[in-house]
Figure 1 (cartoon, rainbow, N blue to C red):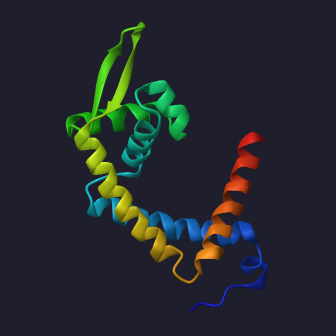
Figure 2: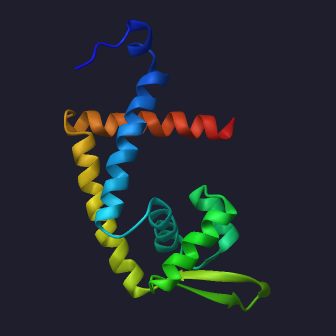
Length: 146
């Protein structure tokens, strides 16, 4: 293992960045293995939890740029994982829904991503994993409000 200067190793921002790079690599490999992408997972997760929503709402709930939402929805629709229909209450917008095939695909991706979480957090006991998740959520929530 390469020695890191104490000034870096003692900075949570540096540690989080290094871990984020590693976590992103693991997640990207996982998504590739199951024929998905991170944006796909985010879109399908929103649709599974909140039901049919507009593309604009998908962007807000998944914290994705509008053009990324459009691209992800197009790709998922081509694969039969989502459907896009005109909103009967507002013909200017589309509602996106998750199909049965999309729900099954989401479960496959979720299982694979669960394994990534286990690999990433392997050195930590369950209680520490829960604590880490709680603390990261607390930090993220605080900084999203700011």
